[in-house]
Length: 137
Image (cartoon, rainbow, N blue to C red; front, side, top):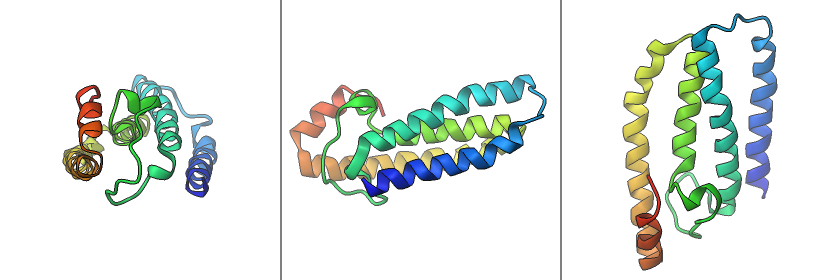
């Protein structure tokens, strides 16, 4: 629970620090598209983090298999929504040229998800394989 609170506090502090920069900025189509992507992505990222609960870890380990909430359809919603939040923020900031960061980020996230999958399959066996068949990424 402490880690969940830390995540929420960090997200809230980031939002509070970002809000003053939003006031008075022109809403270009790129900025509007960025906000339309980033806002739901950040909210879903936070929701995924909360739903993961104590199963969250920086390194791949198998303490529990979370299969409810966002995890009922997506195996790695934190990676998906974190990446989308980054895309939205870069567009909102008017820095689409920095989207090349995704060329680095996506393979790293795929590699991490595969490591996690191996650990979870080793620990949970058929239950994980069944879960994997009915979910995306």
